Image 1 (spheres, rainbow, N blue to C red):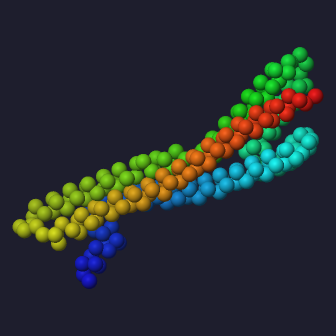
Image 2: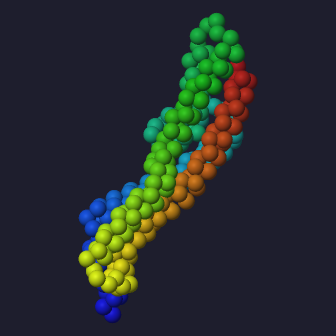
Amino acid sequence: MNMTQDLSFLHLIQNASVLVQLVMGLLLLVSLLSWWYIFLKMFAVRLAVKQSGEFEEAFWESPDIGKLYQAINAKQDQAGSMERIFAAGVTEFVKLKKKSGIESRAIMDGTRRAMRAACQREMDNLESHLSFLATVGSVSPYVGLFGTVWGIMNAFRGLSNVGQATLAHVAPGIAEALVATAMGLFAAIPAVVAYNRYAHDITRLSSRFESFMEEFSNVLQRQP
């Protein structure tokens, strides 16, 4: 009973050295931040996929690009990523069409550039905080390992004052040190899984945006 109580999780953290406690605190903070970004990114990606699907359906069902453009402008900040790409293309197309002496090829090139710029802004927004998750996933185990190595060093240094070393003398110090590695893995594993998942979803969205821009360019070329 005493051994179980002495090796409880909270007891191990309380009895760890100051440096190991700082490492554990840092890993806990990083883990909480990563979970916050994981949930934020989950809702953002799901919303982007949903809005893109709804807009594509409305785009191919609506023969009037002007009405669709006005409906998007009425939404203002509530418009989806693909809707903003569409609006940027229409705005540039109409602006260039009003200028005299511009060839159709130059008009379409300018329209594509405007849509690519809008697409890049949307991708930057979707990819925000992914680098943080990647960093947490790759660095956290090493930070935890640093705390473990330091804790084990302190445990063995404490044995220098003991005449006869036994497992009872070594076990608490090593257990305290291994908690840092466990916390490093606890922070890293969800971050890696979330990063891989969201990177895959965002890559698929990027391909979807590229396909839409090409299809929309073909539609604009047929406009009078």
